[in-house]
Image (cartoon, rainbow, N blue to C red; front, top):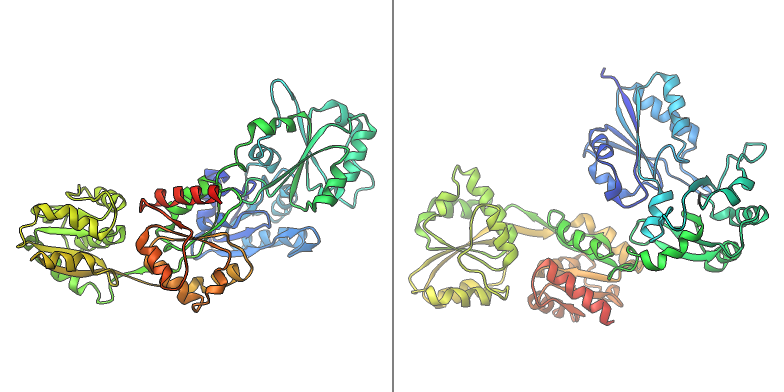
Length: 506
């Protein structure tokens, strides 16, 4: 049996991009992942598909598993020869009870490593535009627990020294004890007018920041309904937020946006929306699959590539499936040397460049009609044209080419099918009013979303519909749904820009 090992990994404060490279590597290697309440679930995408996941989250008043049981679980999994990733919010050694877990592992003879993480004590204020130190304002800071071990006979916090001896005070897990904290600091000389702030769910798309003063903090917790998890920061650095705020004032901050693209295509849209501050909810309504005929029509076309004068691509998926099959058949791009290449838009053209192909025809407007218009001056009417595309697609391009005398062979390169795995999540989000915007990047995403909600358009009431262009918008109208946002540039960046303008206007 192989020797087990436990990695205590700091998952960071919430933003999955704050996970360290070492933390990611250890997570990818793990046989078992033991996760916390504060460890962002998006980090779990780095797990191996066959890895076991055990949730042991603890939050105020609700413990899935007590600390002693968690420590024993880690030791048992390690002794069984597993590589274990203990995923903890923030840093394991900053009030993360990592030391207690290591004591049990040490006693059990299980090898371990601690992988530091970015602590919320610094990251949450930073994302709120509050530096914990500043050359002109604060030369020192302290991180203090707001929730000491209840079994201790007396507090080990030196309130008298903290109140006047440290510029910036950061309390973790202290929301429920705000009055006691404020009273102690003011008792030992800290002014009631000292700026203070609560940062709730720091670094996440739904982060909330509440500014107050030390004297008003406890009352504001009740008045504003501030609840854990939140960082409580006390000090003059809080006043810097008005000039250094950068995270929660972005154009789409606070907007919950459903991304309906297929799983393998969603990342680009998710990334751009996230950069603008949106909280993205990935609910793919379609899945991209190999052709329904098992590449039969594609293979016939590949055998006779030399007979075609043009090859036209109407999507990035069409490009990828065409070239992947070309390579599988033992051919390469030299087989296309005689033909001209057309792309329906810049995204498709960029995908062609990834395969070493420069498109000969790319329209300024990204529709089939416009590709046809760009090609028309060079057409004699005798051309043989190949179009590898989705099983279900508009007939405008092939019909337009045939009307001009061309011989057109449309072959199925891939098919889009409903992603049934998303149905339950989609219904849950819509019925609980968990989204502000839904993005549609093709007619297929519209058809399949409506299929998943059984045509119940009332579930979309109050939600802004954003479409990548007029064709997709027309598909929405077939269901008597009027999109509020229609991008004039039919790209991911164009769609996001249109959403920004739509949100600003609203």
